[in-house]
Length: 295
Image 1 (cartoon, rainbow, N blue to C red):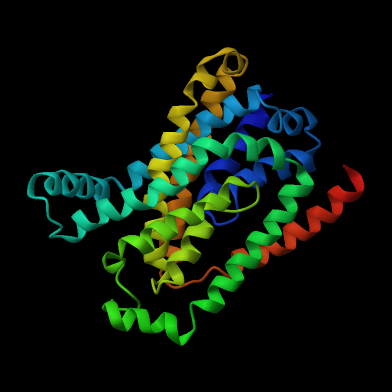
Image 2 (cartoon, rainbow, N blue to C red):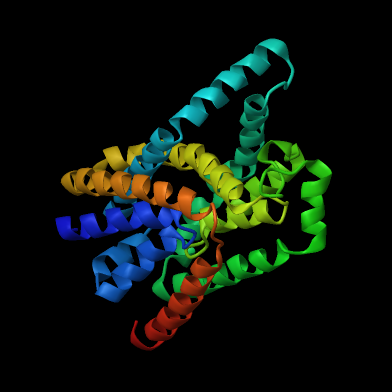
Protein backbone atom coordinates (compact mmCIF):
# COMPACT_ATOMS: atom_id res chain seq x y z
CA UNK A 1 0.00 0.00 0.00
CA UNK A 2 1.40 3.39 -1.00
CA UNK A 3 1.14 6.53 1.10
CA UNK A 4 -1.05 8.11 -1.57
CA UNK A 5 -3.50 5.21 -1.25
CA UNK A 6 -3.39 5.57 2.55
CA UNK A 7 -4.25 9.28 2.32
CA UNK A 8 -7.10 8.76 -0.16
CA UNK A 9 -8.66 5.92 1.81
CA UNK A 10 -8.13 7.74 5.13
CA UNK A 11 -10.00 10.83 3.93
CA UNK A 12 -12.64 8.60 2.36
CA UNK A 13 -13.14 6.67 5.60
CA UNK A 14 -13.58 9.77 7.73
CA UNK A 15 -16.16 11.30 5.40
CA UNK A 16 -18.15 8.21 4.39
CA UNK A 17 -18.33 6.76 7.91
CA UNK A 18 -20.49 9.75 8.88
CA UNK A 19 -22.16 10.68 5.62
CA UNK A 20 -24.99 8.14 5.12
CA UNK A 21 -23.29 6.58 2.09
CA UNK A 22 -21.36 3.63 3.63
CA UNK A 23 -17.66 3.82 4.43
CA UNK A 24 -17.21 0.05 3.99
CA UNK A 25 -18.88 0.15 0.60
CA UNK A 26 -16.68 3.00 -0.61
CA UNK A 27 -13.57 1.31 0.76
CA UNK A 28 -14.32 -1.48 -1.73
CA UNK A 29 -15.73 0.53 -4.65
CA UNK A 30 -13.09 3.28 -4.86
CA UNK A 31 -10.06 0.93 -4.96
CA UNK A 32 -11.93 -1.05 -7.61
CA UNK A 33 -12.48 2.05 -9.74
CA UNK A 34 -8.84 3.08 -9.38
CA UNK A 35 -7.64 -0.40 -10.30
CA UNK A 36 -6.02 -0.99 -6.91
CA UNK A 37 -6.40 -4.75 -7.20
CA UNK A 38 -4.04 -5.43 -4.30
CA UNK A 39 -6.37 -3.57 -1.94
CA UNK A 40 -9.59 -5.08 -3.30
CA UNK A 41 -8.16 -8.59 -2.96
CA UNK A 42 -6.91 -7.81 0.55
CA UNK A 43 -10.38 -6.52 1.54
CA UNK A 44 -11.99 -9.92 1.00
CA UNK A 45 -9.12 -11.96 2.48
CA UNK A 46 -9.55 -13.54 5.91
CA UNK A 47 -6.37 -11.77 7.07
CA UNK A 48 -4.51 -8.96 5.34
CA UNK A 49 -2.57 -5.73 5.75
CA UNK A 50 -5.63 -3.78 4.56
CA UNK A 51 -7.93 -5.05 7.31
CA UNK A 52 -5.26 -4.10 9.84
CA UNK A 53 -5.01 -0.68 8.20
CA UNK A 54 -8.78 -0.16 8.53
CA UNK A 55 -8.56 -0.82 12.27
CA UNK A 56 -6.45 2.30 12.68
CA UNK A 57 -8.85 4.36 10.56
CA UNK A 58 -11.86 3.26 12.60
CA UNK A 59 -10.21 4.12 15.90
CA UNK A 60 -9.23 7.54 14.53
CA UNK A 61 -12.79 8.17 13.31
CA UNK A 62 -14.25 7.22 16.69
CA UNK A 63 -11.83 9.53 18.51
CA UNK A 64 -12.82 12.42 16.22
CA UNK A 65 -16.49 11.78 17.03
CA UNK A 66 -15.69 11.54 20.73
CA UNK A 67 -13.93 14.90 20.61
CA UNK A 68 -16.72 16.64 18.70
CA UNK A 69 -19.41 15.43 21.13
CA UNK A 70 -17.14 15.68 24.19
CA UNK A 71 -19.54 17.92 26.13
CA UNK A 72 -22.42 15.52 25.48
CA UNK A 73 -20.34 12.55 26.54
CA UNK A 74 -19.26 14.20 29.79
CA UNK A 75 -22.92 14.72 30.69
CA UNK A 76 -23.96 11.24 29.52
CA UNK A 77 -21.20 9.45 31.44
CA UNK A 78 -21.90 11.51 34.56
CA UNK A 79 -25.58 10.69 34.19
CA UNK A 80 -24.82 6.99 33.88
CA UNK A 81 -22.87 6.91 37.14
CA UNK A 82 -25.62 8.89 38.90
CA UNK A 83 -28.13 6.23 37.93
CA UNK A 84 -25.92 3.56 39.48
CA UNK A 85 -26.05 5.51 42.73
CA UNK A 86 -29.71 6.61 42.74
CA UNK A 87 -31.24 3.66 40.83
CA UNK A 88 -33.50 6.16 39.02
CA UNK A 89 -33.68 8.01 35.70
CA UNK A 90 -34.36 11.63 36.52
CA UNK A 91 -32.69 13.68 33.76
CA UNK A 92 -32.43 13.53 29.97
CA UNK A 93 -28.69 12.80 30.25
CA UNK A 94 -29.33 9.82 32.50
CA UNK A 95 -31.96 8.52 30.13
CA UNK A 96 -29.70 9.06 27.14
CA UNK A 97 -26.96 7.01 28.77
CA UNK A 98 -29.20 3.96 29.04
CA UNK A 99 -30.79 4.49 25.62
CA UNK A 100 -27.31 4.30 24.11
CA UNK A 101 -26.42 1.21 26.15
CA UNK A 102 -29.59 -0.61 25.05
CA UNK A 103 -29.04 0.42 21.41
CA UNK A 104 -25.41 -0.73 21.44
CA UNK A 105 -26.07 -4.29 22.58
CA UNK A 106 -27.75 -5.81 19.45
CA UNK A 107 -25.23 -4.57 16.88
CA UNK A 108 -22.34 -5.21 19.25
CA UNK A 109 -23.23 -8.87 19.80
CA UNK A 110 -24.11 -9.55 16.17
CA UNK A 111 -20.99 -7.80 14.93
CA UNK A 112 -18.79 -9.75 17.31
CA UNK A 113 -20.05 -13.00 15.83
CA UNK A 114 -20.69 -12.26 12.15
CA UNK A 115 -18.79 -9.10 11.15
CA UNK A 116 -15.70 -10.85 9.82
CA UNK A 117 -17.68 -13.45 7.83
CA UNK A 118 -19.92 -10.84 6.21
CA UNK A 119 -16.96 -8.63 5.35
CA UNK A 120 -15.12 -11.46 3.62
CA UNK A 121 -18.27 -12.69 1.83
CA UNK A 122 -19.58 -9.35 0.53
CA UNK A 123 -16.45 -7.21 0.16
CA UNK A 124 -16.43 -7.30 -3.65
CA UNK A 125 -16.95 -4.28 -5.93
CA UNK A 126 -20.13 -5.66 -7.56
CA UNK A 127 -21.75 -6.65 -4.25
CA UNK A 128 -20.81 -3.34 -2.59
CA UNK A 129 -22.23 -1.37 -5.53
CA UNK A 130 -25.52 -3.26 -5.47
CA UNK A 131 -25.84 -2.78 -1.72
CA UNK A 132 -25.02 0.92 -2.07
CA UNK A 133 -28.04 1.23 -4.38
CA UNK A 134 -30.11 -0.63 -1.76
CA UNK A 135 -28.86 1.88 0.81
CA UNK A 136 -30.18 4.68 -1.40
CA UNK A 137 -33.59 3.00 -1.50
CA UNK A 138 -33.62 2.69 2.29
CA UNK A 139 -32.87 6.41 2.70
CA UNK A 140 -35.53 7.39 0.15
CA UNK A 141 -38.19 5.14 1.68
CA UNK A 142 -37.32 6.41 5.16
CA UNK A 143 -37.96 9.98 4.05
CA UNK A 144 -41.38 9.01 2.67
CA UNK A 145 -42.39 7.03 5.76
CA UNK A 146 -41.46 9.84 8.15
CA UNK A 147 -44.10 12.08 6.52
CA UNK A 148 -46.94 9.69 7.33
CA UNK A 149 -49.56 10.79 9.82
CA UNK A 150 -48.86 7.92 12.23
CA UNK A 151 -45.22 9.01 12.50
CA UNK A 152 -46.23 12.61 13.11
CA UNK A 153 -48.62 11.36 15.78
CA UNK A 154 -45.68 9.95 17.71
CA UNK A 155 -44.33 13.48 18.18
CA UNK A 156 -47.68 14.68 19.46
CA UNK A 157 -48.06 11.71 21.81
CA UNK A 158 -44.56 11.96 23.30
CA UNK A 159 -44.03 15.71 23.31
CA UNK A 160 -42.85 17.90 20.47
CA UNK A 161 -39.67 19.95 20.22
CA UNK A 162 -39.50 23.43 18.72
CA UNK A 163 -39.66 22.03 15.18
CA UNK A 164 -42.76 19.98 15.90
CA UNK A 165 -40.88 16.67 15.95
CA UNK A 166 -40.49 14.17 18.76
CA UNK A 167 -37.93 14.97 21.45
CA UNK A 168 -34.94 12.63 21.50
CA UNK A 169 -35.19 11.98 25.25
CA UNK A 170 -38.72 10.55 24.84
CA UNK A 171 -37.52 7.44 23.00
CA UNK A 172 -38.56 4.23 24.74
CA UNK A 173 -35.96 1.57 25.45
CA UNK A 174 -37.54 -0.93 23.06
CA UNK A 175 -37.39 1.72 20.32
CA UNK A 176 -33.76 2.37 21.14
CA UNK A 177 -33.09 -1.36 20.88
CA UNK A 178 -34.74 -1.51 17.45
CA UNK A 179 -32.71 1.49 16.25
CA UNK A 180 -29.55 -0.20 17.51
CA UNK A 181 -30.49 -3.50 15.89
CA UNK A 182 -30.90 -1.75 12.54
CA UNK A 183 -27.14 -1.20 12.52
CA UNK A 184 -26.68 -4.92 11.91
CA UNK A 185 -27.41 -4.22 8.23
CA UNK A 186 -24.37 -1.93 8.12
CA UNK A 187 -22.10 -4.97 8.50
CA UNK A 188 -22.69 -5.45 4.76
CA UNK A 189 -20.47 -3.33 2.53
CA UNK A 190 -22.70 -0.69 0.94
CA UNK A 191 -25.19 -0.20 3.78
CA UNK A 192 -24.48 2.92 5.85
CA UNK A 193 -24.40 2.70 9.65
CA UNK A 194 -25.33 6.36 10.12
CA UNK A 195 -27.92 6.20 7.34
CA UNK A 196 -29.77 3.15 8.62
CA UNK A 197 -29.73 4.51 12.17
CA UNK A 198 -31.06 7.90 11.05
CA UNK A 199 -33.87 6.27 9.09
CA UNK A 200 -34.83 4.18 12.14
CA UNK A 201 -34.92 7.37 14.22
CA UNK A 202 -36.92 9.32 11.64
CA UNK A 203 -39.67 6.68 11.43
CA UNK A 204 -40.00 6.92 15.22
CA UNK A 205 -40.79 10.62 14.93
CA UNK A 206 -37.40 12.28 15.46
CA UNK A 207 -36.33 15.22 13.30
CA UNK A 208 -33.21 15.00 11.14
CA UNK A 209 -30.96 16.82 13.60
CA UNK A 210 -31.84 14.60 16.56
CA UNK A 211 -31.78 11.46 14.42
CA UNK A 212 -28.27 12.40 13.28
CA UNK A 213 -27.13 13.24 16.81
CA UNK A 214 -28.35 9.89 18.14
CA UNK A 215 -26.76 8.07 15.18
CA UNK A 216 -23.36 9.70 15.76
CA UNK A 217 -23.46 9.22 19.54
CA UNK A 218 -24.41 5.58 19.02
CA UNK A 219 -21.70 5.04 16.41
CA UNK A 220 -18.91 6.29 18.68
CA UNK A 221 -18.70 3.40 21.19
CA UNK A 222 -19.42 0.76 18.53
CA UNK A 223 -16.71 1.97 16.13
CA UNK A 224 -14.24 2.47 18.98
CA UNK A 225 -14.96 -0.91 20.55
CA UNK A 226 -14.65 -2.67 17.19
CA UNK A 227 -11.30 -0.97 16.60
CA UNK A 228 -9.97 -1.81 20.05
CA UNK A 229 -11.17 -5.42 19.71
CA UNK A 230 -9.15 -5.77 16.50
CA UNK A 231 -6.03 -4.01 17.77
CA UNK A 232 -4.13 -7.33 17.79
CA UNK A 233 -4.48 -7.33 13.98
CA UNK A 234 -3.00 -3.84 13.80
CA UNK A 235 -0.21 -4.62 16.26
CA UNK A 236 0.58 -8.01 14.71
CA UNK A 237 2.33 -9.11 11.55
CA UNK A 238 -0.24 -7.64 9.14
CA UNK A 239 -0.13 -4.24 10.78
CA UNK A 240 3.66 -4.14 10.84
CA UNK A 241 3.65 -4.10 7.04
CA UNK A 242 1.82 -0.76 6.90
CA UNK A 243 2.84 1.04 10.10
CA UNK A 244 3.60 4.38 8.47
CA UNK A 245 0.55 4.19 6.25
CA UNK A 246 -1.65 3.54 9.28
CA UNK A 247 -0.40 6.72 10.99
CA UNK A 248 -0.87 8.88 7.90
CA UNK A 249 -4.25 7.36 7.02
CA UNK A 250 -5.52 7.65 10.60
CA UNK A 251 -4.63 11.33 10.79
CA UNK A 252 -6.48 11.93 7.53
CA UNK A 253 -9.47 9.92 8.76
CA UNK A 254 -9.66 11.82 12.06
CA UNK A 255 -9.45 15.21 10.35
CA UNK A 256 -12.01 14.43 7.66
CA UNK A 257 -14.38 12.81 10.20
CA UNK A 258 -14.31 15.89 12.41
CA UNK A 259 -15.05 18.19 9.48
CA UNK A 260 -17.76 15.82 8.24
CA UNK A 261 -19.65 15.71 11.53
CA UNK A 262 -19.47 19.51 11.86
CA UNK A 263 -20.93 19.88 8.40
CA UNK A 264 -23.64 17.26 8.85
CA UNK A 265 -24.93 18.58 12.19
CA UNK A 266 -25.51 21.94 10.49
CA UNK A 267 -26.81 20.35 7.29
CA UNK A 268 -29.50 18.34 9.06
CA UNK A 269 -30.86 21.41 10.83
CA UNK A 270 -32.75 22.18 7.61
CA UNK A 271 -32.01 19.44 5.05
CA UNK A 272 -33.06 15.81 4.51
CA UNK A 273 -31.55 12.48 3.44
CA UNK A 274 -32.81 12.81 -0.14
CA UNK A 275 -29.53 14.10 -1.67
CA UNK A 276 -27.68 11.12 -0.19
CA UNK A 277 -30.37 8.72 -1.40
CA UNK A 278 -29.97 10.05 -4.94
CA UNK A 279 -26.18 9.79 -4.72
CA UNK A 280 -26.28 6.18 -3.54
CA UNK A 281 -28.76 5.13 -6.21
CA UNK A 282 -26.84 6.78 -9.06
CA UNK A 283 -23.37 5.69 -7.94
CA UNK A 284 -24.50 2.24 -6.81
CA UNK A 285 -26.30 1.38 -10.05
CA UNK A 286 -23.61 2.99 -12.21
CA UNK A 287 -20.68 1.21 -10.58
CA UNK A 288 -22.57 -2.11 -10.43
CA UNK A 289 -22.97 -1.97 -14.22
CA UNK A 290 -19.34 -0.92 -14.66
CA UNK A 291 -17.93 -3.70 -12.47
CA UNK A 292 -20.24 -6.32 -13.97
CA UNK A 293 -18.60 -5.79 -17.34
CA UNK A 294 -15.02 -4.96 -16.35
CA UNK A 295 -14.14 -6.73 -13.10
